[in-house]
Structure formats: C-alpha cells, structure tokens
View (cartoon, rainbow, N blue to C red):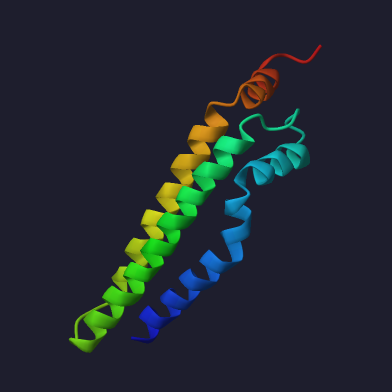
Length: 121
C-alpha cells in the first residue's frame, strides 16, 4: 500500500508541476529551441498549445483513474501498485507522441538536423 500511495503522490506532484508548462507547450518548445540553439521560433505554437491541452486532459484523467482504481483495489485487498504505473505510462506515451509529432514535423527542426549532418566548411 505504501508503494501505491507513493506512486500516486509522485504522479499528482508531476501533473501539478508540469501542468502550466504543458498548457503553454508552444512557448515551451520555443524556449527549448532557443536554449538549444536550434534556430528560429517554433512555428506551430497554436497547434502545440491545443495539443498541450489534450495532453493535460489525458494526464489528469489518468491520475483520477489511478486514484479511484487504486483505492478500489486496496479496499478489496488486491495489489494496486501497478495502477499508478500504468497511468504514468499512458500519460508519458501521450506526451511523447505529441512532442514527436510537433517537433518531428517542424521545418526549423529539420533544418537544424540537416545542418548537424552536413560537413562544416
């Protein structure tokens, strides 16, 4: 039970700490580009913000499901530690898929990668 509670607390802290960053995903990616020297401003900020909203909804829903299902399993005397782990995997995959789609389709990022692979003159 202690492991389940710890994992739920970790998940809740993660969702709370990252909520604003993911809600403003376009600006966050733009800042990442700037810090990494990738180049011009990230071009799909509006789309990124909409997808960030979707990711936040998925993360909150996964957390709520994990709390409810964990409590239900603990009360019935069954193992529950895996429930927050599954919720975390779902949330992580949702975020990763959005980031791969956004950055992977960005022409600025493609140009940056092309510059890394070309010989320096």
